Amino acid sequence: MAEPVSGLNIRFLLQHPAHFIALGAGSGLVRHAPGTAGTLAAFPLYALSLVYCTPLQQLVLIASAFVLGIWACARTGESLGVADPGAIVWDEIVAFMLVLFFTPVGYAWQCAAFVLFRFFDIVKPQPIRYFDRKLKSGFGVMFDDFLAACYTLIVLAIARNVFPG
Image (cartoon, rainbow, N blue to C red; front, side, top):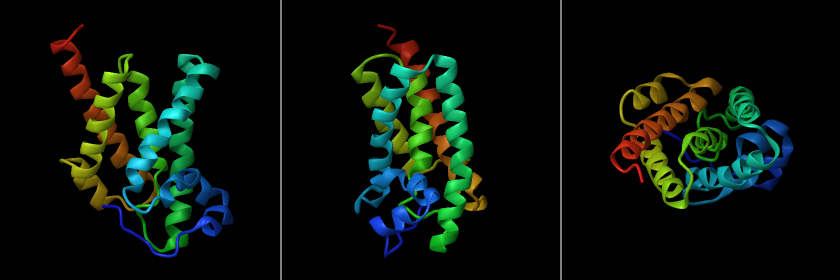
């Protein structure tokens, strides 16, 4: 479970490139619901990738962002003395970009994807909760949100088969 940390500010954000990445360019500094702010930050990043990348390049970008996140989240967690503080939102950004990649076109689908992803990220059904508690590294920070993305995509796939239009 993400823990709140006091003393986070713009100075900390700009102190190291890992902090800037892990804190989602500042979206993680939002006081209430930083994970939601980070998830919202994925929308413009994904939109940019649609303009400048092929689908294969988008997947490579998302995979590279995941690997980068392992380092950035670990480094930032070490600096803060907390493995997964709430302000670290790169995991939400990357995982939700993956969700958006596979989400059917349309605002209704994107809104449903957003709500489902936030639900799974907050509630953490098993095995998400297990990995969230057991893996305290940068990989652990990134992995539980990847699982929330997988749950989201499964529900969206079911919904798409039920509501094909």
